[in-house]
Image 1 (cartoon, one colour):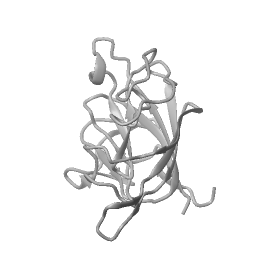
Image 2 (cartoon, rainbow, N blue to C red):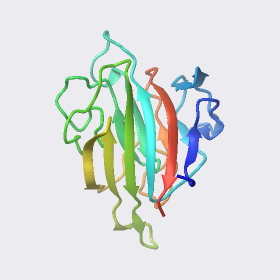
Image 3 (cartoon, rainbow, N blue to C red):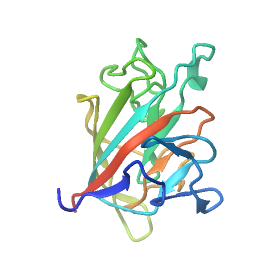
Image 4 (tube, rainbow, N blue to C red):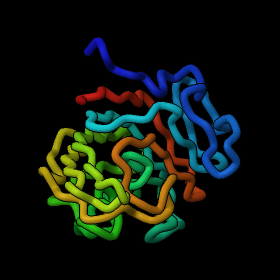
Length: 194
């Protein structure tokens, strides 16, 4: 794994910036963990085909429901959102944890209870674009949540709104979403495969 790019090793968020303001990332970093405080953060590193590893912990928010309960997102290439949400015990849906948001529900609900560390291992084959920016070959993604395959070689027909771009890209950053919930992250790295 000599070409692994570590985006967050628990020390600081120097590998990220706050996308909307293009300023240094300001999330709280404590005891090796980064916790959402203000603003989506985006990696300075951009990649094409890659394996991505992200660990996250959803807070216990019993007073909240639906999309207000531990919501965040991992945007691959800054344009495809893998939903983060407290979906413990829920039916798999296209807006629950592990979903490619509003496009595909996960095959199974692999979510753990809130306050437990969970993992996403994501393999992306980047889209290939024509000269005019139209999609020549769509991106293909495989996602494991907690070592369970929840998406297997899924063809991504479009991007998700709310990312870095409102269109599909061949190379892009990793965006971690601020959705007003104190979700925590650790051990984030990317292994380029192209």
